[in-house]
Amino acid sequence: MALTYDKYESSSLSPMTHQEYDYYVDDAIMAVRGYCHGRIPDDLSEMETQEPTAYKAIEKCIYRVTERLKDFDKAFNQTDGIASETTDGHSVTFEKRDHASQDADLYRLIRKYLMPTGLLYSGYDPYWDDRKW
Image 1 (cartoon, rainbow, N blue to C red):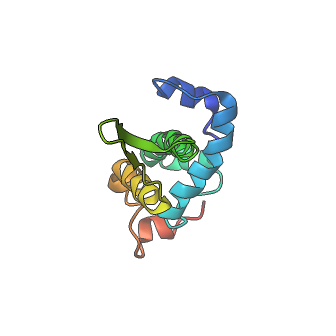
Image 2 (cartoon, rainbow, N blue to C red; image 1 turned 60 degrees about the vertical axis):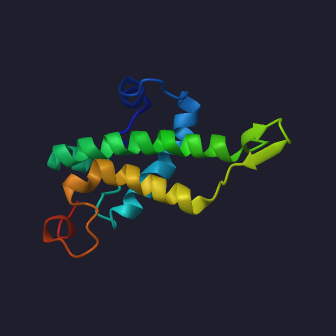
């Protein structure tokens, strides 16, 4: 796989650990592949040589999605889930942690990086769909 931890570490301001990266990167790749309607090959090194511009966008996107998935887990696994609390009359507001809003957030992130590539188009695109990776 062309998406190594070393590349990720050099592209991130505050990288996660190698173990965390290994845990989240496969889910990130699958999420991006899903939104690209199967247009990304299993072996990303093929795309790196044939479509370097699109590959760079995918690489950045996958690294950011990996970080976002880690953030989702961190937010979802917080024990208290308190968004705000006041002591005057003691009012507590809890965070809403639903997966639909996380999916929408992931799509916005993926769209930010991949919209210019044409990979997110849901119809038939002869440029991407007729490729034999």
